[in-house]
Length: 227
Length: 263
Image (cartoon, rainbow over all chains, first blue to last red; front, side):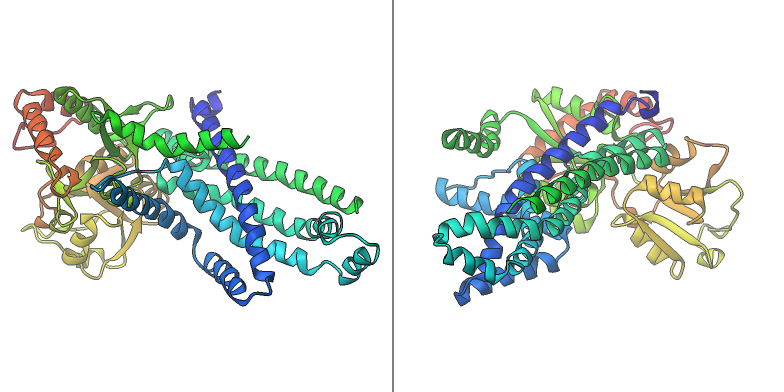
């Protein structure tokens, strides 16, 4: 433990928070991404406009800005609502984890929507028509034909988004969440061993992303086999 | 499953409300990364002058203290949006900040001082004590952005190249690697963050600077009009009056933080 100069436990906690935040944001973000991708493919004009606006705004603004916006904005919005409800000035502060996860999910959703839309575009019309010709209902066609194909085609891009998300978690340190990067900075400042702790941070991020690259690779292989 | 999610959601949403119901806790924002005022040791425990001071205030007010670590840039917005109720963040009292928050009485007088490497020589001040920007032509001054020192250098040392930093440790690291030639920050921080860590390598240059630009010192901030201000002031004053302040001061600094209280 001497290599960590006593900071091993704190950094482990940081890694844990990074993983938890990333996984929670992934699960909410993928739902947002799917919904927005469907909106963008919608034949109704106003739904399409909404979907396009979402991805344009999210992909066109810095993630940091969105995180701060959600953190302060949500507090003000919820408190205003609560004040109206109760009838006097009330302040409710959502836990930082909630703000952080919402912000990262919203951002991930924007990028994932484009990846999923790409997967939808890659589904050959012939296969869908063939499914109809075989007498599959539109529901069966969606589950047995379209979704496996969309999954197969969007997985590489989604994997990319996922790696970016793992690294983006370092931004939530600005709203006072002490994830991996923040813990390493604290350790570096405390011990004045900057190079060592930044190297540790780099190594830990690389192992996290490396593990995920492997998982994505396995998923891609599996996606190619079935269907 | 649905029930479980609802219960979970309920607790997530109600946590702050439930916490508020207890009411008595004093929620304090602090930097947690600013030795020796407020930092964290390897056990995750908060230590430092401001931490001790706040704990003392808490015990005199009979209120439990809950610390919130906050990055400097979002410290005041977090205070105004009720993330915490008081901010002890070595915040200099300035007219501009007084429009956003109320300040307690000062618990540190503001003096700034230049720090640099042992071999650096320049006549920063003329013999009669006037700033001498010409001596720094071609040199780079490093300082923390959004601080009083930024205005000070801009008005007293016009034309000298300035590099802004987010964090003082990064600033000192860049002085070490030669990206900046000299730094300016509060005397106490230049001493504790730079010189005291490696007296063989670093030194003060020029005298202690007292300047109007540095304002009235460092105080704790509360929201505008918050009655908490009176409580904090009363506690601070009693800490200063009975000599506890001097004891806390000497625990962390070999010089006085409040020359008006003790020399």
